[in-house]
Amino acid sequence: MVFAAKVTEVPEWGKKLVEIEGQQVLLLKMKGVVYACERECPHQGAPLEGALVKEAGKLSCQRHGYRFDLKTGACEGHPECTLKIYPVEIRGDEIFVELS
Ligand code: FES
Image (cartoon, rainbow, N blue to C red):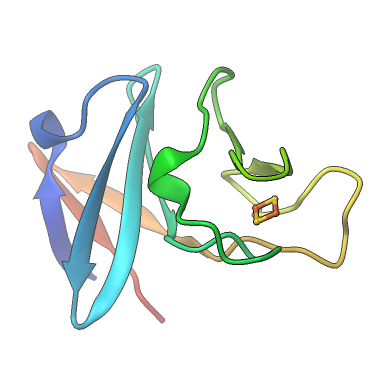
């Protein structure tokens, strides 16, 4: 696991883009839960820092509205599109991410 950011650096219902070991990782926080996923939408590559977060644990791509589950990466209605999710661990006030 690698350090990604401090918990306080990710706003509630917000996002923070970080670069870890050369990979861009999007951190999100909803209802106090931190998620980490790849930056680009698996559909057509839209940068997901512009995606909508209106429901806890879900992310809606702004380009065509595909909705992803932030626990599994599954896309509703589009099983061919899976968002890469990175396991997250909180240690104190720090976020660690597993990149494999
Ligand atoms: S690029 Fe994200 S839904 Fe199409």
